[in-house]
Image (cartoon, rainbow, N blue to C red):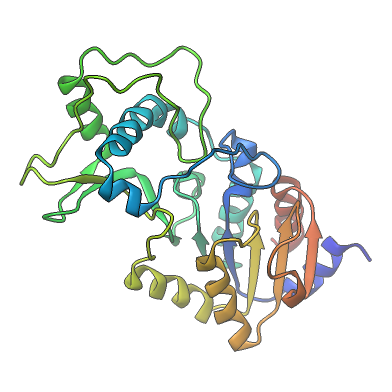
Length: 270
């Protein structure tokens, strides 16, 4: 019996919660921090750096503007579509994703908890106003009409590119109160909002199994979701190219790409 056969046998007839990471989006062309499809960078943005270093914020906003359209352009792949198909069939109860690309929603999944936020919205840290990222892009272009996107884009895992210079660049601010803006994503060193994590817990709590796909579980937020499943004693299936922090806890580990494996699971379970 193959590991996929074993997983199908374990998952069949159960309501399945799904936890995904960057590895499910690499087949759509979005780079990951680790593993297959990874593109390393010297210093990922941390919340401490973002809040305390204006030069770093300038680099981030300019680089983010140069890259965000390329980051939001990729289409959902076979893995995203397989999960959405399982949800439509009543097999999957919901998706908890560590990704900020919005591809699960675009694939048709309806109950999605974006654990680390989304690159599609921007938040004012002073008054709490939320803006569509497109509106902030328009403001940025008005403030910096000299900015031109390069013809060739090489995205970093943050969804940005590395600008050659930030000289003269003006950071956009909140049009309501003038406060500091931040993409609505959880940076390194920042906590997942408690309400959002409770929503992730609720997905696990109404499920009979947990399927993990495309994450090494290096980030603790994903491990916390798995710990909730372990407390309930429900089966755990992990799909990832490389080993993960939770392999020893899993009932089945499938070493492979998320697109073909999730497609095969959907074919067998629907």
